[in-house]
Length: 221
Image (cartoon, rainbow, N blue to C red; front, side, top):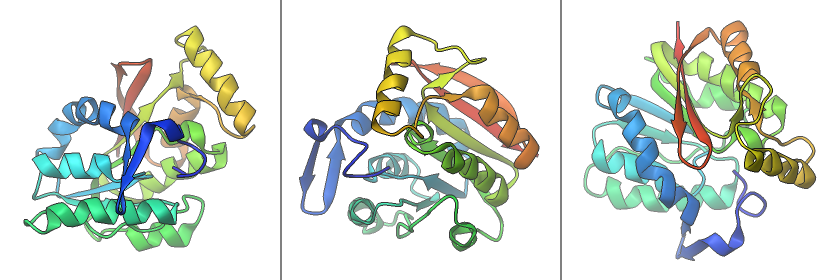
């Protein structure tokens, strides 16, 4: 998630180093509710594209014993993530320093590997604002670092069988491609094919979410 390109600048504020995105605030609890069954028993969680850090902060608030590893390509946002994390780490939570993660860089994936593997790798509103090569690398990277039985969860808009769920999603896709031809709403079946054929994962379930979004759950074999 890029601070200067991918966000509506009218919907953020910054206090000291903490960046606040209105969109992240709106969906954080909805996403958390879907993740609770996983987080209840999780030890290590990786977020790919942590943005401002608001999601990690919210999730850690309810699950202080989980070790969260945030990651973000944008250096300015990594400072925001760490600022949020410091607030909770002062009282015993476990949010690690944000790392730079270029999903297409194998060395970056090596630096986030946990010896025991992650219970959960999650990414929120990233796949459609990334080139397909990056989206594919995120899925492949998740398969690399997850433990057997672990979950990869992606939140955002998707097409199903090449079809947009709503006309507004079709228009959103056109807007994205107008900003960058390599962006766009991904076809869920194409993402699933990468997960199955290149990352050792199977599609577990798809959950309809508000605002024409989905949460897609994959499980590592």
